[in-house]
Image 1 (cartoon, rainbow, N blue to C red):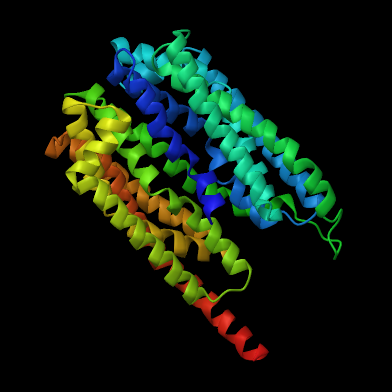
Image 2 (cartoon, rainbow, N blue to C red):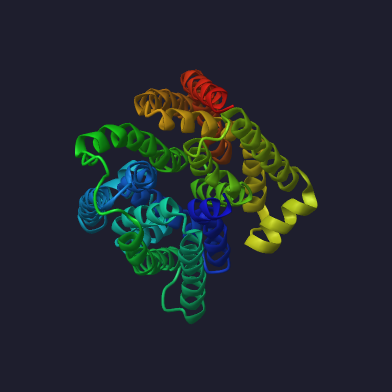
Amino acid sequence: MVPASLNLGVAAILAPAVNAILARGENPEEAIGGYAVALGIIMLVALPQMRIQQMTLVFLDDGVSLARLRRFTATSALIVALLAAIVALTPIRDLVLQRVFSLSGVLESEARAALLALLPLPALAVARPHLYGCAIRLGHTRHVWAGTIVGMGTVILTALALQLSGTVEGAAVGAFAVSAAALAEVMVMIWLTGPALRRELPSAPDDGAGTEYASMVRFFMPLLFAGFLATVTPPVINAAVARTSTPETSIAAIAIALSVSQFLTIILWGLQPTVLALLGQGHDPRRIRLFANAIGLLVMVLAMFFAFYPPATVFILRDLVGVEGRLFESAQLGMRIFAPLPLILAQEQIFSSALMRVRRTRRILYINLIRLASLIAFVLIGLNLVDAPGVVLGIGAIAFTLVVEAGATYVYGRSAMSALSSAWSNAAALTS
């Protein structure tokens, strides 16, 4: 579980590190805010990367399925690369930044520079999870460790070198570092996984029937929409917060609070692939649920400690990240709103894994339609009726929609979990 958590949650480790570096430069609020806006836009363009790994884990069985998965991944990477070029290099960029996000002045300039530096990221972000999925499917956790460590090291070293040398300034520092790290990870993972796949995968399926593209698409499309909602949430929130009274401080505070909270809850990122792997290996679903709930409870206690115990909050926000004044107060409030969520998030991971295991991914589409409606309702109410502070609007919207998603996942997924539990009991009875 640790390699999967580290790999899927590496963004949660790097985000506070990048923010800490940007916080020590000139115009820290505008740099952090511009970087957050640009990264949110680019990750929305790179949408397929959210679910490529799950599809690889489910469908990779032999050389035939590998070839089809690679063609699917390459096509997706080409499409997102073209979209990224349109967003970053054409007048659409100005339309998005000025009209959708209502940016102006230094904040707009920082976001514009970061968009250009992030141009290579979408295609690399699509290829990367496929390669990690291959390594996890083969059980080569050392490859996952190697690629993740290379990526983390490249981000931090590149950002520090650019910041100290003055070659690049502001939001572009983080953007260039993230793009360079993605390239390094992809190159390392191609080098590591290529020989292992050729050596360990059978060249063709035993029964002669390979995975059809139609099956892959039916599995992938509902998950893609779920990934779309998770990816579109930060840009929607940033666009809403940009219309509050203190947009620079609020957007920066949300980015910091969310990055620190995700870092503290990083172990949850590996919960879903771990649950999927354990279910696939035939373990008792009831024991798996107990394990996942224990992880969620432990992570919640950790998040609450750093959010509500002032010396711990000061250490992580002021001493490590380097924020002061009103930015510190706003980020602290955001952490406190997010802190109770890990146990709820664990429930979503448990029951969404059950739905994926029995391949009922259409229900995940329904769940995310419900989450989308709750997000829109919360933002509209917060902007027009309540006039909530920016950080409360942003982190509150994330927290509310995650709670709604967890509840809907439980409602739709409990029958899948019951079916898995019954199947396990019947199999255990036959073997006893």
